[in-house]
Image (cartoon, rainbow, N blue to C red):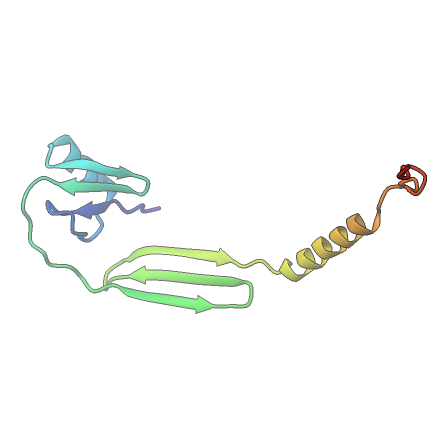
Length: 120
């Protein structure tokens, strides 16, 4: 599986991602430094061109799953799937039921009409 290495130029502007092999080579030759570890991002220490490829984002909406993919003309840069929760209404109903049960279950309290003192 190909994991992209994100790249920033000298001024911190994003460039196209690169491969792990090329990123490791740039770090060993000290042409780049680690900018961020998660997601792994390197910043170049030499001037480069500012050309970028157009990236197309595709989203597939479904009832429980949403798929997305960002791709260039040659390869897929990133893709993923998000699974939506389906039990939110059931969890809200359970919370309401627990709250009402808790509030209706009051402990026994003895009456307080005999503990008053009368003024003389």
